[in-house]
Length: 55
Image 1 (tube, rainbow, N blue to C red):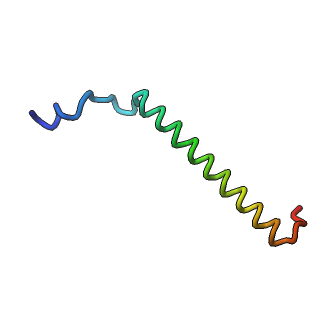
Image 2 (image 1 turned 180 degrees about the horizontal axis):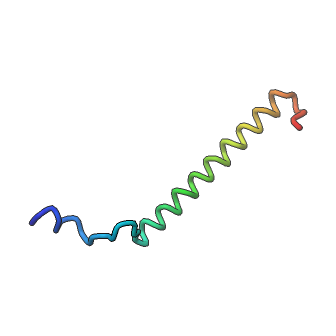
Image 3 (image 1 turned 180 degrees about the vertical axis):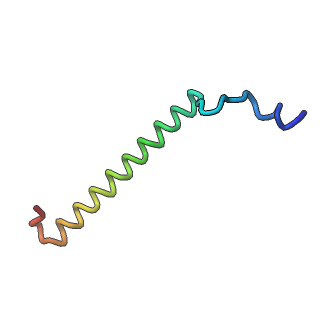
């Protein structure tokens, strides 16, 4: 068999399968959670360094 036959169904340029769309959604959710976590850590650090008087 050739390499072309082993790759499975071909996609049109720019098209995504449902699996790729779901994975992208999961990746964006993880990214949002990571940014939220970093923001919380930043705010807590600023409050601790300012002695609790963060505006």
